[in-house]
Length: 158
Image (cartoon, rainbow, N blue to C red; front, side, top):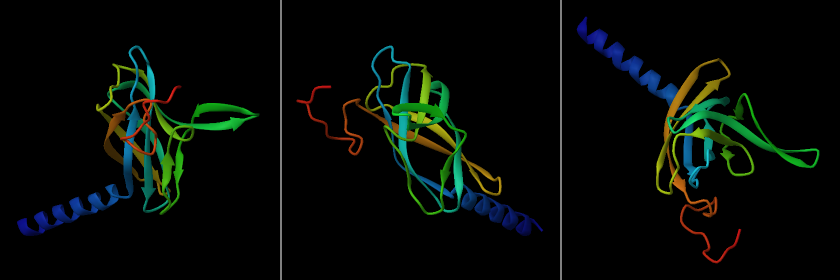
């Protein structure tokens, strides 16, 4: 009987692991801030094995964390919180500057280049199952190009 119970526990643990592997996160990063700056963005690529959506995010680094979109509205670029970001099955969805992103507001302290910012992302599938993923997103300098964590041009003026 003990073997059956142990076998069942292992089976349940493996089943819960397969559920938690439904969304993969790649290339996460957070934009570093300057002293006194109270907000920044987190960016990454998400890919789901089945239709899902990113419904929330949180971080101990910020008092408020929201999923945001930037979009043109009547010729004006506007940023707003959204209830969820659709992740179509098998399609990579990129969160990037100027588009969808995770907004971290009411920062507890300055985010410095090289810091690892912890994020907890919550996803929901069409059948209502939720999964959370813990991510450590490295902070990149404000002038670092989005496509490369290394790079940048010291001669550029902003």
